[in-house]
Image (cartoon, rainbow, N blue to C red; front, side, top):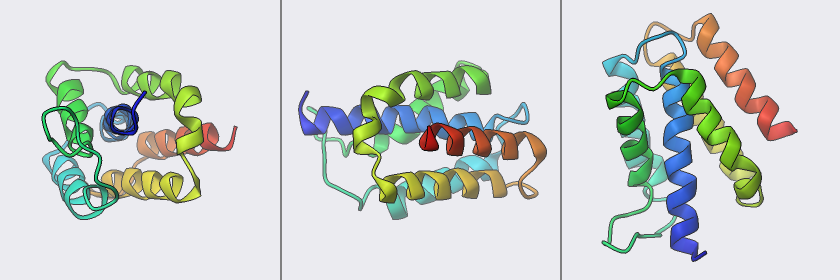
Length: 133
């Protein structure tokens, strides 16, 4: 698998992970989506320069898979399961910096609407447990 394809896979699965946090309380708020878009633009796009075969920066796949999950009414649990099932294969790419950025993004999404609620705290805890396993 090429480096670009690896990043497309990572970012696609991160989109599902971030959706799982936003949808943890049963609905995705506009403020959560706007926070994701802001963070992709400010943090994820500058991270590295991988592009897909069409020249699209691979980090855009975060938003694409988030939108796909939202449009298709995916449950938070199903979205998290997509990330969790792919994580063993991608684990080696999740160095401490990428894990921290992932957790920071997930926390910011959870905080974007009326602060983090119990469902979102549970979702964040699941991510930490997965990273620590």
